[in-house]
Each structure stands twice: as structure tokens, then as C-alpha cells.
Length: 344
Ligand code: PHE
Image (cartoon, rainbow, N blue to C red):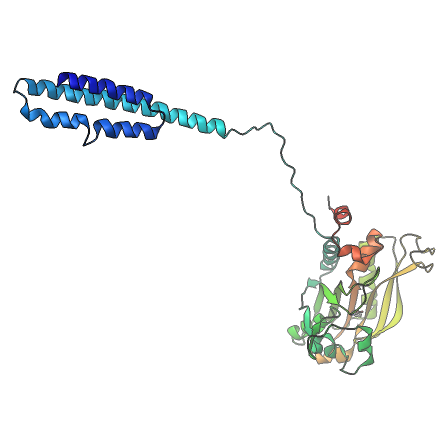
């Protein structure tokens, strides 16, 4: 029995030494120290031994078990350390490698213009409103003094879904919507940027979808001179202090009187050049005093209140400001175009 234990110990220690990973080590542990292992077997057979031998063999079996256990633990620690080292080596990060540059996006040139215009008008006490792009015939036309058979509807060829529903052709419906919201009580001072849609053939200066910014100011005693002052300040902030504006009589069904507003040409300083078609002036927006009937239809007393409204094309502002010669550049997403408008 003594020899058997001795050879078991030698055998086990050798197997432990040979184990290559923790799985192999676990197998050795089960094989020698498990319930069905040879050492347990020796201890079970002790009943057959003499009274003198029993404590000696018992002691020896315990020593063998302790020796194997100790070796197992030592080996396990060794293997674990090796495994961690291998993992660290395979996952090493070279911190000296150059990083991959991240391509930063930038806001669209039209967004930049909208934000600039918003900033200027917010500075004058205006609030920013929104309205739906799918609009009813009522708000897009009728509430703006354009009844169903009005010839001026031809000024804006429209995309209709049904007889009563269309893609808005202008941001002006937001005038009526906002006045309704204020329930006949001024003052009301808003601008509204947004997409509009018209059945135009696309070319260098036309797009079936474009952007407008609407403005509306309704209060007691609002006068044409207020309109002129606000737009002059806007033109100077937007295009430069040296710019002037002029008002030309025009027609819109929802304003009376109506005007078209020109800004002095920045290229020739008003002297006349190719850009301004030798007039010294460039048209930037339509405007006028809100028609009394429009005020009344949206619940404002036209004897007490008056107001002005204006509408400008965002693409047109951007094209003037940045010397862009084709409106389609805004929609074709050529990075060579867009990257020029990165803000610092
Ligand atoms: N809605 C007009 C257009 O699209 C512009 C405009 C707005 C004119 C407000 C007067 C007042 O042409």
C-alpha cells in the first residue's frame, strides 16, 4: 500500500506538471483526488489493515493528497498568469499609431441663411412660428383673400392632393394660422421659415421645391414706415451696412398696398452691372400692409389693428450672399459645393 501511494503521488505530480491549460489541470484533479480516484480507494480499503498500519497509511494518504493539492494550486496559478499574459499580448494597443480623422458634417447653406435671418428678426422682437407643408386650400388661398376662382391663383401653380388639400405654395398661410391662434388680440410679431412647392420646371433659377421666410407684424398703429424700417435694418444686417433698399409698387391679394423690395447691388455698389441687370438693384422680397379683409377673416378688428407682412426666398438670399449661379446646387448634394459653407 505504501508503494502504491508513493507511485500515485509521483504519477500525479508528473501529470500536473505536464498540464498545458486549466482544462487539462481540472482533468488531473478529478482523476486523482475525485470520489472515484485511487486515493479515495486506498482510504476506503483501510478497514482491512492492521491496527498499527492503519494510522500510518492514513497519515500517508493524507500527506499524498496534500502534496498533490498543493502542486495543483501552484500550477493553476502559474497557468492563470500565463493566460492573462497571452491575452494582454494579443490585445495590445499601439498608442503611437496615428488616429483616423473623423469627417465632421456641417449644416446646409440654406440652414445657415435661415438661422442668420432668424437671429436678425429675433433681435427685433419677432418669434419663430411653424406651419404644415401639406396645407388646406382655405389657409393657402382663401384666408389670404384668394377665393376659389381668383385669377391671381395662377401666379402660383400648385400641387393638389384633393380639391381641398395641397402642398403649400407659400409660407403665407402661417399668417392666417397665427392670427387665428392669437384670437383677435395683438401684438403679434412672427417669422416663419419653411419649405414651399410650386409646379415649376426646374432650371438655374427655378425649383419645384424651395424655401421661404414669412414675416408678420400686427398691432395697433402699424404703418408702412415700420415695414420700411424693419426691412432696411434687415438688409443692412444681412448684406452689409453700406446696402440700401427701395420699395416698388406691386400686387399681392393679401396685402394692400403691396410692394416688391430691392436691395442695392453689392457687386457694383448701385452703379449697374451684369448681376443687377444694369439697374443697381436686386429684388429680394415681396411685402405690404396686411389687407383688412385678411385681418377680419382671421379674427382681427381691422379698425383697431393694422399690420405688415413680407415673404422672402431663402435660396435667393443665399445665391446673392454667396454668388451662387444655379439654384439646383442646393439640392444635388455635391460635397465640393457643400464643403465651402463650413462655418469656422
Ligand atoms: N407669399 C408671397 C409670395 O410667395 C410673398 C409675400 C408674402 C408677399 C407676404 C407679401 C406679403 O410671392
